[in-house]
Image (tube, rainbow, N blue to C red; front, side, top):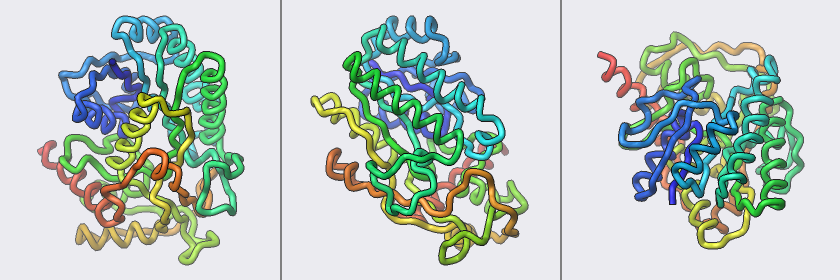
Length: 328
């Protein structure tokens, strides 16, 4: 059995490739390298530069390598950008996913594990968020992912494609062995940019809004270590292979930290100081999002190994220092 990882040269995708290789799986990667980095994937892995929206190309690849499972990470992920350029997100996240599903059904793929997002919930008072909470995304990013979830459920019912939809909360950190990390140019994720500031790559970190209805006025998020996230994906595949039903699961720890919490931890762990001015809110941001991850734990037997903000931040800082060392 061979697994295709779309977006496998990206941040989460490259960690997934390593997790699968560690588990002895045969892996093929496709990435258009618009944001992914080729060197994030081991040279031994079959790697194709291409567009998942190209049905003929993807179908031929699925057939040639007898792919039976797809881990689908390819897509665009920046909320404010989706507000400014919604058509990009409906193309990259929705239309291309639709074409990938067509290729998958034609090629007889059995399992499809989809990288979704907590942004499908939008601004809701139901915290921690449960899988059955109302779905009312505030941004084109969240809407584009929700549309793909709906398509996948319909395709599964029509064609027997068994699936897992994993809704990520805020993914951060790096591979504990520093084999890969977040290397996306111009990244916007809080812990990533804070780690860059800690090693001198950024002069300051802007806090987007200090007047949210939270204890310190800054947004609160549920940060999950990327290694725990990809372990959840591996557990989802095991569940499907064992005959388990299709499912939708939140991926988070069930606790939240504010922007100021993260910045204080970064400064303390790195020993660096940097300005953190408060500026206007960003379009599409919501005040608080925390996962209820009971289903992930009970259905998959998932137990996190890195559920600690200091550990997540430390791994992110170590990755930035590792990248700096490699560049010298």
